[in-house]
Amino acid sequence: MPYFLGQEGKLSLGERYTKGAKKFPLVGGVIPPQGATKGNSIKLKWLKDTFDDVDENASVLEKQASCRAYILCMIGGLLMSDKSNNRVHLKYLSLLGDLQKASQYSWGSAVLASLYRELCIATKPSVMSMGGCALLLQNWAWYRLSCVAPESLNPWIFPLAQRFNSDGLNFGKVPHNDIEGYRKTIDHMMFYWRPYLMFQHEVSEEEMVTWTACTYLHCFHIVEKHHTDRVTLQFDFHQQIPQLPEDMRAYHEVDMRHGVDDN
Image (cartoon, rainbow, N blue to C red; front, side, top):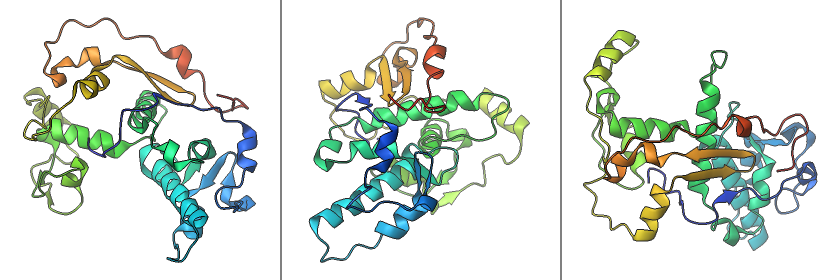
């Protein structure tokens, strides 16, 4: 809801990707120069510089090329970024060959899978930064933990992330560099499980089944469990004592390094 990303569609963003895919012309017959790539990733700056300016008289193929480049920049710069935040993996290009087909994928669940994996990695003491859609996490927290959120003068409009854009925010009542203050505030806070109730949005049974599904989220090599059974209050359900979460360590050992590129 914060970013209008659909959860419906193909549940697995995981069509086969191989090393050879990086030799495939990126878009419109344009092959990135050697300096624009690093391993199986491509620099976002090169994508922007090469495809940002599209002439109104451009051919359909050229416009499609620009569209693919724009989507790749969205993926690498916001939705499923890595810690570099300046490159995007070419595995996503395999999903954009047919732009009509691309809309059939469950991009929302893939974004969650990527974010969950990055949050898990970030719990290691040696890790100082993280990738994934951090803005989604921030907006989720600000809507539900008002004690740590800035005051916003912006209206509640879709997509909901716009309410917390840089304009119209007042951070005066938010603790700054005060760990003790944060702890005291959190100890007495009110958690808003359903902050969107003010919206008159009719939810279909199919949508509800998707949102409440306790299932696996896929994004190529990433597999994460969506433990909705542990947060049923956000669906206006009674919270039962949940089962122990599934041990995902075996899934977390699978990555795309050390030549493991076939997923």
